[in-house]
Amino acid sequence: MRTFARVRAALAFGAGIAQVAANLTAQAFQIGLATAPAEQVSGALVALTNATFALANAPTAVMLAAVAVAIAVVSLSHRTFPH
Image (cartoon, rainbow, N blue to C red; front, side, top):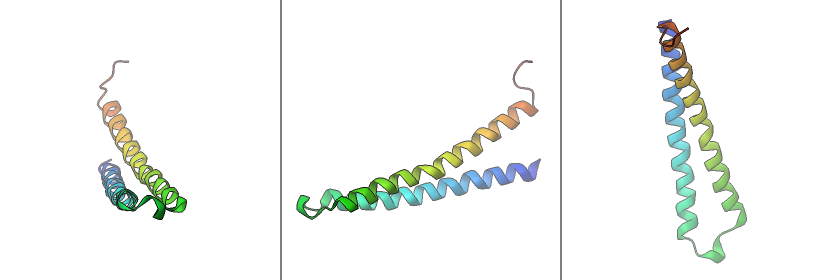
């Protein structure tokens, strides 16, 4: 049981770190879009920025799922909810 808890904790932590890294990368693209003159901004760069933000949300889903499983396992094992 403790090994499974460590795996979930490591999964949630790793997903959080991956989300922060992906989000910072996407924000770098966004800053480039905001500071560039309008005639120099290509549609491909806008699409790349949108795709990067969308991909940054995938690790967030993994992190939240790992936390939800941890909460469910702990509350069910300690009989938190009435039967």
